[in-house]
Image 1 (cartoon, rainbow, N blue to C red):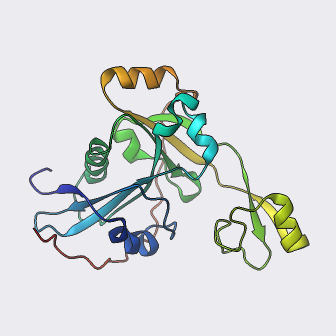
Image 2 (image 1 turned 180 degrees about the vertical axis):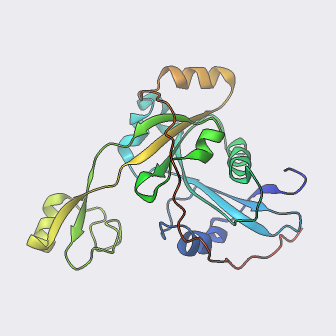
Length: 225
């Protein structure tokens, strides 16, 4: 695989078209580190991003306050379908190796989209069950907009939402996701983080994955060396 593909740090802006047009979420997340998968012609064939988790409670919830500043989320992974077996797990492994240490990496597989997280299973993430049940505000007539969109509830409390939208706002259960955790560091660091893990380790979920439409072809060009 290494003779055909390479992984490099890239500018987060290089991921935007991939994330907005090809990934099913259609949103730009928090990006602290961005990596690109390049083929032998140095053409970008995939992107992977890591950033601060959306849930602030997750920072302390994984391994406690001691490790809160070390928690990050693998929040986007998008690869062109180019017929190479195990390419996604190869890409993720290389990206993780390039992150600063120590890190506690959390990632999710969206069960509502028919995803089980097989790429994380292949890269030795620990499975810690489904995310907790939470509720998101929804405004009648704007059901298609994410609650984090500016003007649609971002940074607002429930009381503020009710004051602004009145009876037009209601709370919808958020789809639960498969949660995976990986410890990145030296052997002593991994052992110390593992000892503080607050989630129960569970058997990997199995099933048939459902594919979504990822046919968009981003504008790519070779890396200039």
